[in-house]
Length: 306
Ligand code: NAI
Image (cartoon, rainbow, N blue to C red; front, side):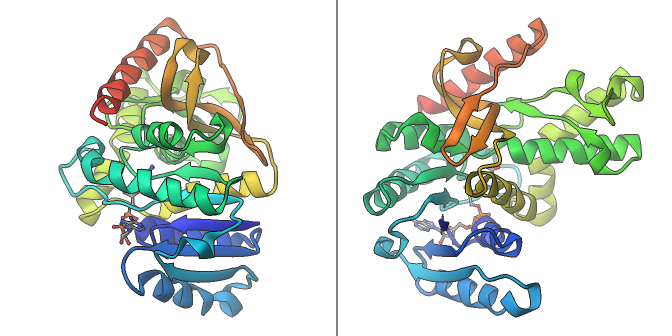
């Protein structure tokens, strides 16, 4: 399994690190536009191999896509992150140009590649990657829901005072502070609905803290987060590499599922060796359906800026 990670910045390097530590890929190529940067990150990471016990070969290159040839999976993290007070949508101008060129270069050298889009505004960037490359829809996956769901589980466990491994929950819809939909109704602690343990007010607080999870970190760090985003991407790459058929909420191109068309937005997907192998249509309540439709309107408004 050869994986290319475009952008050797905070998220890209963290993603490469987790992929290497999990030891399922033979090769990771880090590529960045900044001269020598990806080479430096790759060398630094390779000097952890004997300490961390992995065999993955990590190489770094500056803008030379021939070195990415034959990649099975490519992760696009190139672009600018938000600063405190910024929304993800404000990044569109610069990031759209980058995502379009990068996707074309990736497909040129790896015609069978599965692309995971991370750059923000992610749903719109995934939609743009679909439109500009014309790849089959199972081969372009937007990463947002895996991260938002991890943040939801963190907040649920915090509120319940229990280990994160005891809770399960999912966040669907648009990857934005206002668009996210944490499915509190379906969240469980050891298979028991969390509403058995938490009041409606507390659950609303958990949902709100989840939605602003990225903004909270951006305020603390001065830039957006990288550990959990990198870990979320690495889990998705692992699901493809090991053909696990694990379910992640991903930004997928919809063609009628959930009543939505011609939009890439977060819905539960089975991920395996072919990328998105199935979009799972779970039964939503009327209120949840309305929130998903509203979130889709928000994503469409950003798509219209392309
Ligand atoms: P960063 O600034 O640390 O890294 C971005 C890297 O991309 C830089 O090293 C830059 O030189 C490189 N780059 C810029 N243009 C390029 C090009 N044309 N080709 C190759 N490399 C290029 O930023 P960070 O924190 O890694 O974030 C990256 C992106 O991921 C941002 O757009 C951010 O908003 C997004 N993000 C998305 C998340 C999600 O859940 N979807 C979570 C966290 C971040």
